[in-house]
Amino acid sequence: MNDNQKNILIFTYYLIGAFLLSLLIINVARLFLLEKECGVDIVLQPAKIENENQICYSSNEISFIIESKNNFQIDKIRLKAIDNNGKILIRDIENSIAPAGTLQDAIHIEGYSEIKSIEFIPFIITRDKIKTCSTQSLIVDNPKKCSFLTLPKS
Image (cartoon, rainbow, N blue to C red; front, side, top):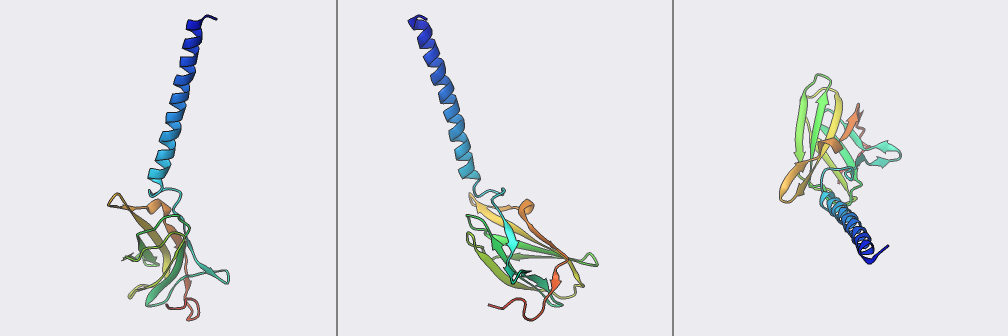
């Protein structure tokens, strides 16, 4: 193999290496940029006390404690509840949830029959835009009725 062929071979290796390095940098940058996007990193779940989900309803309120397993803040939650008659309640909860934090609240409701489903839809603010993360929402079907001992008021 002469010097010219060696130089072409070395150049080819450097070119392939530079291409692979650029792919790596692009993928790492995408992970950091998408970190606060609506992705698989958003995990909401009901808090549990003595193995009981802390989401329930009564005739006049929906009470809940939900936990975030994220490494970033959830800026707002939209609560969507549907009763057995198909009547829909939508309330925005302006309280944020800190990284790996909890949110405890009670939403006043009136004129709703038995609640069939409650959905908690997370919102995040990224680049000064509010983004709805509906695919990562927490859905609780057939929530239980509250007993006065279920959720302590804060």
